[in-house]
Image (cartoon, rainbow, N blue to C red; front, side):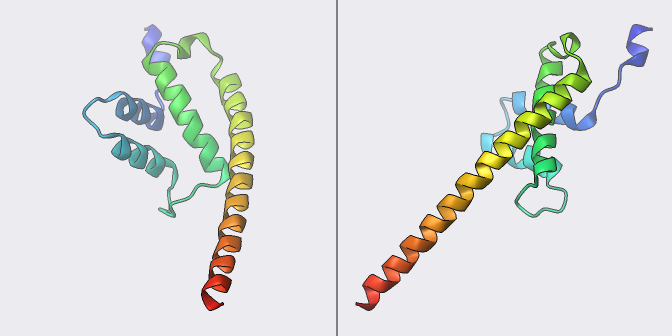
Length: 115
């Protein structure tokens, strides 16, 4: 009877199953888990999707290894959203810097080739 109230999030279950599998190559694991949240197959995630990705990973693995029962699910989701927001901002900033650097290097290479 105690288990009749248990609800399993399918995305978290699939994420955990794929991540712990020894039979699935790492790049396939990444592509599968990424694809669960990249619903439009854009090859990139917005901040909400990134937070969902982290939540699927942490909640799924927590449940798989028995840690989920000791955490308040809503508190964990709230904390993972805050962490995801910080990570996303940092990744976005670093990406913007790299793009600027690559563009500057490309322009410098063109100038050198012309001279």
